[in-house]
Image (cartoon, rainbow, N blue to C red; front, side, top):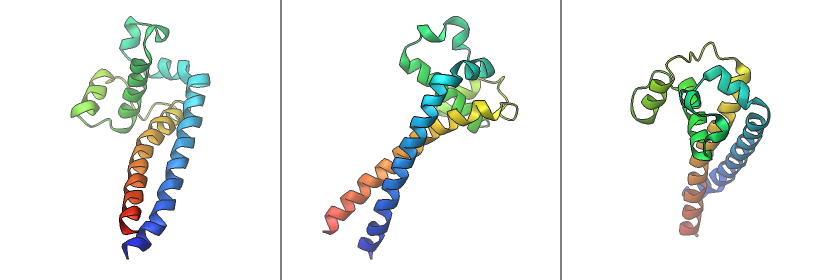
Length: 133
């Protein structure tokens, strides 16, 4: 019974992983090549008041984009990293942000986070398949 589940779940998880990687790649390229300035102007992170985008290291740039993603998706959360993003960006109202700013962030970080979950399930299913064989 479990081998039948693994037989069907493994290709599905692998396909989902590839789809997440593709969505993350396409959204990330669009965001960084064409939409980054518009996103930063629309959402106005407080770190960008002190430093320009070009001065920041890659880890802080990704943190700023993650703050934008969290604020747009989890605007009512107050704990852990969600609370920090909502504290830094209280001026951002998710309903008023245009879709042209939202979709690259959703595709980039949504693809990353869902892809991590999918990758873990692929590895777990591969482990199950080898244990059952």
